[in-house]
Length: 242
Image (cartoon, rainbow, N blue to C red; front, side, top):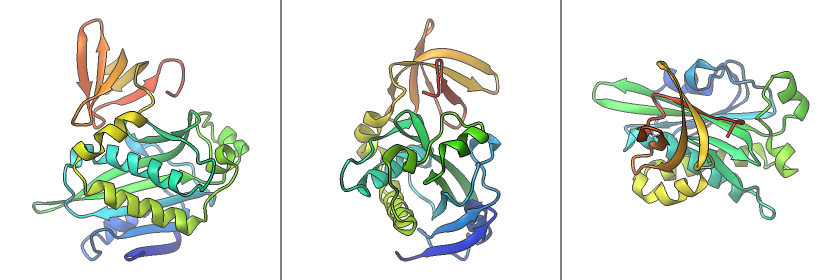
């Protein structure tokens, strides 16, 4: 794959691209054997060891940035499934972009914007749980997470997984969300479920009923329907992760 960077160790693949954003080309992707200081959404740390695949993709001034995170989640689902010739794991999405297999999270995604004048670049950070054991997640207090090895019984070669995800991300990121909408909505697993919407102003319980054409989550409570943006809230299930 062109514009692919392989590192032995890095603090964060997102930080690596941030530091070199001006000099690197659009579509450049980086991965490392070990990431030591990865971050998730809302400042959470990524629990990582060499059994997790970290990667980041640089997109220079991509279209429709507001729902880019949704398209990335869809791309990761498609990439993972494509690497299993038989008995491919069925990947879904906990809105907006957590990749889920068998009700367990196998991938987290963090999109960060980097502005240069009028140009808004986006760095997409992805962490795939590849071959960690159940004991790893238990010790890390991550009861809703699992690895591809745990859920599918085998794992793709790391380099192939990295390149397949990066290429699929670039493909979906270049498309308008309207062309991704039907497939994205089909994969959203927390529709028709009771969810807890967590924002800086507090928590609100509602039913997730649909995905809007802009990628927002449509919810309903006693006061009627309303939309929530992934940039403003976090969504959790009432009875579990979903």
